[in-house]
Amino acid sequence: MLGEYELRCVKCGRTYRADPWTIVCPHCGGLLEPVFRRKPLGVSWALFRTRKFGVWRYKELLPRVRPISMGEGGTPLIKIGERLWVKYEGSNPTGSFKDRGMTVAVSLAKEANVKSVICASTGNTSASVAAYASRAGMRSFVVLPRKKVARGKLAQAVLHGATIVEIDGPFDAALDVVMKVSGRESGLYPLNSINPWRLEGQKTLAFEIVDEIGVPDWVVLPVGNAGNISAIWKGFKEMRELGLIDKMPRLAGIQAAGASPIARALKEGLSEPIFTDNPETVATAIRIGRPVNWPKAFKALSESRGVVEIVTDGEILEAQRKLGKMGVGVEPASAASYAGYLKLLGREISPDDRVVLVATGHALKDPDAFPFPEPVRASSVDEAVEKIRGLAL
Ligand code: AN7
Image (tube, rainbow, N blue to C red; front, side):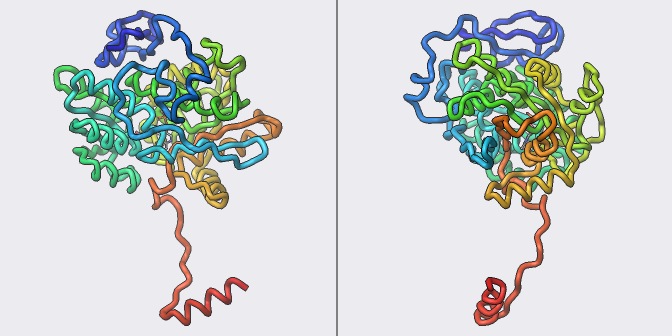
C-alpha cells in the first residue's frame, strides 16, 4: 500500500516509506507531506473528464486504494459576480469540505485494517469522521470543546454513532488529547488534518476549480487549523509540475479577529504564529488558537505571494447575511471568505481579478448563529391571508 508515495518532513527534510500510521516525522516531530516517488504518467484533463466530477476523478493523483466514498467533491461553483465565484463545499455528503479528505484517509485506514478512528474537532471534522467511519464499519471517537460545537454538527456526530468526549478547553486541548491517545498501541487512528492523507484528499478542491474555470487570480478561504490552505496550495503546485496549468493563483487566508494567530503574525511580519490559549469567535469552526499546520500554511502563503486578512464577528455575520440574500447559505466560518474578500477588494484584490471564495460548510450546520426576526403571526387562515395581502402590496 502507498508504494507510489514517500513521506517527506517539511521541517528536517528526511523522507520515509509511506505508511498510514506514520503521522508526524519520527525524527523531529515535524509535519509530513506525501510526495510521488515517480511523476504520475499519462494524466490529462481529457482523461480526468472521462469520469464523474468529484474527488476520485483525479485518482492517478491520489493513493491507490479502494475508495470508501459517498460522492464527495464535485461541488457547485456558483457565480455571484462578473469575476467572482463561490466554491460551495456545503454540497458534500456531510455538508463540509472535510469529506474530501475523509474519503481518502478512511479508505487508507480501512486497507490498513484499522478498527477505530479518533479526531478532535470544532464540529465539521467530527461529523465527517463519524459518517465515514460508520460507512467503513469502524468505531469513531470525537473529542470536542464543550458547548462550542454548532448544533447541526453535534447532531451529525450523534446520528452517525460516534462516541463523544467533551473537554473543558478549546479545540487545541482536544487535539492534544488525540495526539496523546492515538497510535498503533491504542489502535486509534487519528483523522485530524495533521494526518497528511486528509490533506491529500482536500487538494482536489484546487483541481476542481481549475477543471471548471481555469486558474483564478485569487483563492480566498477561511483558516483555522490551516490544513485546507496547505492542501489547496499542494494541489496547485502538483498541477503545475504535471503541466496541467501554467500559472498560479494567489491565496488569501482569512481569520476571525478572536482567533487569528496566523493572520496577526503575518501582518506583523513575524515568522511564527502568535498562539493564543483563549480563541473566541462566533465562527466556532475556526475557533482555534494553536493551528498545527502553520508551517505548511506559512509556506503556502509565501510561495503564492498570498495575503492574510482579519475579520470581526460582525463582519462575518454581515457577510453571511449578504450571501444568504444571494441564495447562498453558508456557516459563519465560510462567510469569513466573503467578509475577507470585501475588505481586500480595491486593495490587494483588484475588481478585474477572477476570484474564487471557498465556502467551506453549509448554513444548516449552525442554525443558531444568526438572529431570527419575529415572524408574522396569525391565528386563523383568514387572518394569515389578510396579513400576507397587506404585506405583498
Ligand atoms: C467550515 O472541524 O477544524 O484551516 O475540527 O469547519 O483546514 O482547519 C474545522 C475547520 C474552515 C478551517 N471552515 O479549515 C474541525 C475544524 C469550516 C471548518 C475551517 C473549518 P482548516
